[in-house]
Image (cartoon, rainbow, N blue to C red; front, side, top):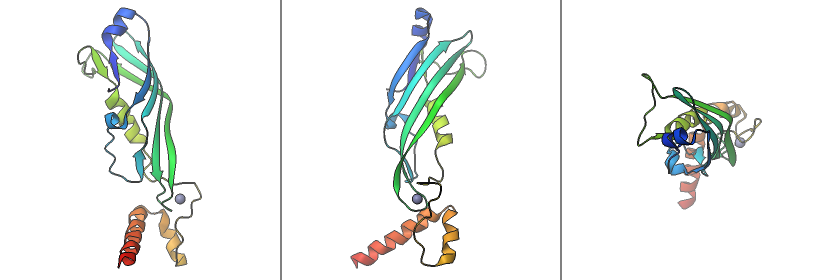
Amino acid sequence: MPLLVNLRHLETEDQDLDLRGELPVTELDLGCSDDLVVPAKPLLYRLTVQLLEDSLLVQGSLRLPLQCQCARCLKPFEYPLEFPRWTLLLPLEGEEKVAVDNDCIDLTPHVREDILLELPQHPLCGKDCRGLPQPVQGEAVKTSLPGQASSAWAALDKLNIEHLN
Ligand SMILES: [Zn+2]
């Protein structure tokens, strides 16, 4: 189930709507191509939806547990992406108005958009992670550069291959 708000309910009940639940990772569909950051569990949401004159106000919290891999040392670690005060204002009138399908508004794309913006680009297990042990001292400087992870993988692959032979 996507994260839907039924406008008809809001209009007839004449009160704020509480939405609580989990949004499966497949539904969230972040399209992560990056192995370093993978959504591990469903997104937890706790939202209040309020019908204003010509817009919909959504407020609440979102939490998405991510399974990350340190870009420096390759150590796996969990990182919860949290939005403790998430707010979304959706216009119901005018040019920018939100799409309504069968009296329902799908909040999923809006949630997805904000999560994509906040996904860690360069996950680190800790602020002072020193990365993989480097044989040459000068090499250590390079660990903070993007692309390090892939070269580390390449090194690991090479090791595996050597083992197989
Ligand atoms: Zn690390």
